[in-house]
Length: 489
Image 1: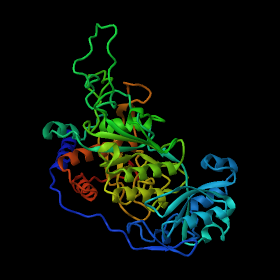
Image 2: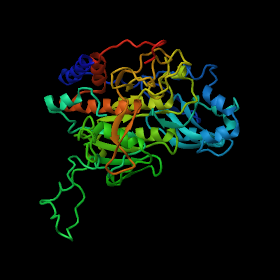
Image 3: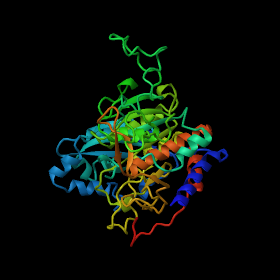
Image 4: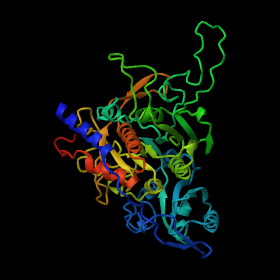
């Protein structure tokens, strides 16, 4: 065991010593189509997904209607209303995909069918909408409009959490190379981040950083302590409740998941310590800044995709620093058949666009292992099936693949996940308290660890590109055989 762990630690250290070569992001394809008024409109999507609708695995009957959407339209009303909770009875939440970037004329044409567009994506040829059932089922309805190539179900998301500072060699990077992620900015696309937790409220766990002299503890009326001048959270965008940026000092978590994730990636370890050792629960890149993109899970997938668009738009400006890395440990709630995940859903395509914008992106593989699909194969969650991000599986602390962690391939036979890191029994900030820590397991916990490793690598190699990061991780991770049938772990 010690030998395996030592080899893994050495491999992690090697990641920071790899010389960086030049590379380029793929150029956009010249493509497009005619809108509802017959005017040409260019596509904004890249050539990562050329004509994806012609072979999308979720439209097996090639009728431009997501197979899962067709199934849901046949379900009882209570199932539909639980799933499409933002839609009135008799309507569904959908993505409408075009062969061109949708125009005002396209939105008007949808409106004539009773379809209400709720968001237009800047980097996809897609709008999200609420649509009456009849407009979807009628072959002469939405699907017959000029340029419409697909109508997708717009479902719900959930954290990829199954129910420590990991032994991945990260501590050796801190001590041997002096790297802690300083200067890097990591966006957390999740349920939010509790900004007043002692492990996330500043960079040094010193509440008196901004004071020339600490207050006299014997003074019954000390001067008020000013707002901390070294905040860890430097920007806050709420994509669920307000669709607005807020003062990062107001950062909060609408659940508990995002705070835990944030602590794993960049927590300082402030607050309670390990009662048996006295050690602090420090994140992988404690010197990195955080950006809170609150996007789950009181709405639907539109919120998460809107949050991702905000990250692209603010790549160079968020919090006055920009965004280097985005990590997200969210996946689709499960109605889909896992063999249908081929990376072409709207959510997966959006996450590819985040990488195309130059943001290193780590996504969770999902926790959908099960014997029903080839002994755990083909269970990669969406958007973990996206092509360009690094998709992360979970290891137990003995470095075996966790029993819950989703396996590949994708349905179009690409290798996913890209890498695995420790994700079981991870201690990180507890959003229910200002100083406590709690243990959680899942690919949700493994994914931010990889994002933290990315921050350490950026500190060592500031010009590292998204392609180089993925190539280095693939080239210098330890390849292991995984038994599937008799020993799924």
